[in-house]
Length: 403
Image (cartoon, rainbow, N blue to C red):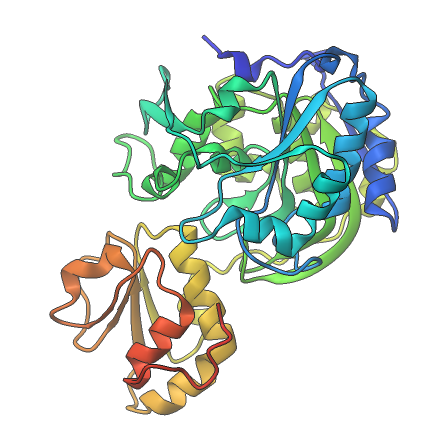
């Protein structure tokens, strides 16, 4: 049976959910226009938790974190509807959420509106059963997610190296408590299912942890090596729906990606958690497809993206992967020049790498079992300067501003 979190009072026709797309140069206005097409009156007198994508410390317009003006417009729309609004996030391991909020400008818009800004990692988790789960049987959920009446997912429109895309359904993984997010990357393969266990787990999660409303921020998205090492892509869009699967399906189409090719969306839709067939979705305006623009997809083999580097990656999480990819983008040429041995520079990340070559750089605590054979860099994740120090054998890197 579906939980309270999957029952949206904003969803008027479940068999044919409505999705609104708004486009323009002003992200605040785009969001207000889109939300004006949704009857928000069920939020009157309710506690509303806005869950943006603010898991990393990055500058605005990077395509990594939710645009602060989209958050501002969501706050204003729900406050106008008579709701009590808060903004909360549970970032990746090693990131202080308030620093991430400060960097992206969300702190200011929340303080200007005298709303609550929450580190939802701060309090003990609540165990939530996943009765129909195939990869997981329970989740450690940040308590505010259960205490608030309405949860709104506000992700960025991005590709993702593990899950194809990260949109409103995947963004709810950021409601999981602390390191439990990492655990979803380390699951054993699910017997009888060919998909990666992380994708099965997200589909499982969506059966009990779906938002009541989705606001997808396509102001500046990210393509390629998403969710944090790709290229920003200006779209000037906002996508809104009370069915998060329908919202994600339309966002996928705007990215020139089929939602049916995204495992967690396809599996969740097959279980009846939402609609992804565009023929079963009502989209406003009628010309929304005119605004689509193909996104570069994540490479299937990371080593092809960085010639001369052999990346051994199995069951890694986004934190270690993003740290490594940003390091290679910023310092890859220097590392290869210093390596200079005629053989690939080998780097291992993730808990599942079975064997490594001698001298391999083992990045993050999950690779500790190989430390006697390689160069081990501890951390969860280690910062880029730690990795450079290990490579160069000294306490500071050539350019330590890589975090």
